[in-house]
Image 1 (cartoon, rainbow, N blue to C red):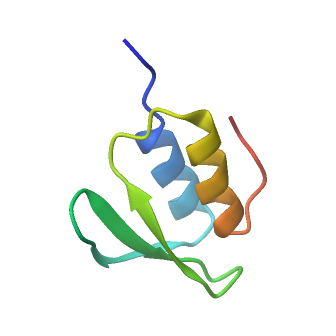
Image 2 (cartoon, rainbow, N blue to C red):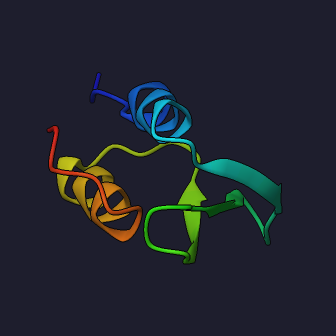
Length: 65
């Protein structure tokens, strides 16, 4: 079974002060980062470490996976 990075990504986002704004289209959530001032989508069921790191980069956080 492929690893899922959802929980770890969301935990890192919350720890950095990011907040969930709303449910997006399909299986995505819309988050906001106070570090970058950007909003960005976070899919559920993240199986790629590259996707997980890209989400963290959008939030202004360093790579973790």
